[in-house]
Amino acid sequence: MDAALSDPDAALTALAALPLRDAALAFDWDSAGEGLDRLRRMMSRKGVDLETAALVFFQGAPERYNMIAKADLLPQAQARCNLLDSIHRRIACGFYLLDPERGLGQAHGQMQSWIERQRLEGTAGRSGRWVFDTCLLDIQVTGPARPIIVQRPTEPAALESLWKRLSRMVRRDRQVKPACELES
Image (tube, rainbow, N blue to C red; front, side, top):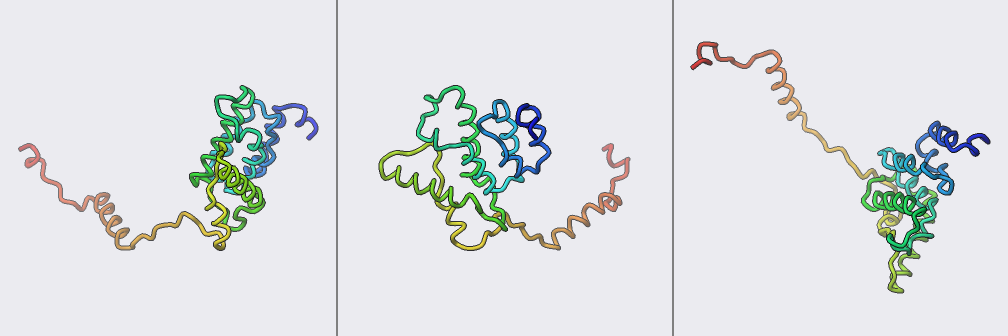
């Protein structure tokens, strides 16, 4: 693993061998360089849960850039802030779902302190770059985590009629006009 620390390509290869959650959490924001694109691809996958996304977001040290306008960022920080923007947007719009077993888990405390800090900044008349909705924490307070996407029940009759129509088409049970009638 020492070779992976000295060689950035070896470090990326080592990260690729880890499961998605572990690879995202093991990502080193400070020595990332061009590796931010790799993290961006990891964080845009559907298998990432809300806890992992929040932990990765907070590992990116958003508090350093929260009060800096996008136009005032140094070029070195622009890629990092763009990735933080992307993760924040996905968290805010509900792209990342809660893991029913873990919920927000380790990220709950960090999320709670971030929301409290943004509330204090709001009363002082300031607003940061990344604002989270308090309902993220309300999900945890109101009870056990529930799946957000629920499969819609299907009626057996609808499936049966579709099956009958498809089988008629395949078996050619439908009536076909004789060739002499098609010409006219």
